[in-house]
Picture 1 (tube, rainbow, N blue to C red):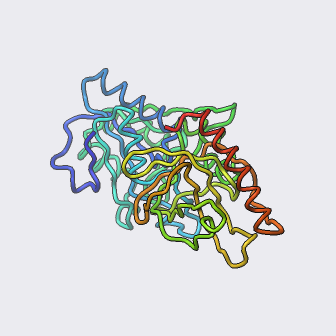
Picture 2: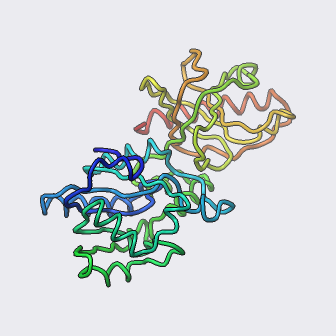
Length: 313
């Protein structure tokens, strides 16, 4: 899959294409349906399937105080979209100039003149253009004028409820990993860099890798989790992860720290991804370090059992 980061990086206009459009944060089952529909149409018509998206959520520019945390990092989103069979991914810079495009200019200048769209696939709630003035009804009206066909897909239902990025964030923030991943249709991975901490885990007999996020991703609810960790060399290890303020130790501060099973290497400064397999319990304050250590032993045993029974990837 060719990736074009910025419209100016497209070397020459496409003669023809089928274009799937959306923010696609999380690439959940609804997003997958849109992209797969575009790929199927493109293959049937003998033209390339393009996925058109943005380098940021529009709210980061238009309503920064309300911009949601991301489900996927840019690299994760690219990886997931590539797996769906698109020929190209166009990542437009959503800046002030782009946000002021009228619906007509977006369709004419970008979809038709630059991408050669002969078919467009979107979700029924798709909005675009200055002031979100463009919608599916607009795209339907303009089919004959601009020479494309439109397919607008209804939301995909998971458990009878529409799949959405908002729903994924809500379930992650509630610690409901199973439902979040059911809506995603793939694992959720939290990405970061391992940094030095206060070495509290080592003092308690459970040295941990402290994760510093590399992107503004949504973080699951505070608590203890069974996890699968992927290191930057591709190795996958089981672990027990704590997210929260570590209330038993005064002044410990907030952390995402993971005890990796049967592992004792220096990985400071290296990238690591965490897949959350199951939430074991909420965060709790213990009366003593001894009580905390005893609970940690139980958590590690539970996490080991879960890791051994569930697939990592």
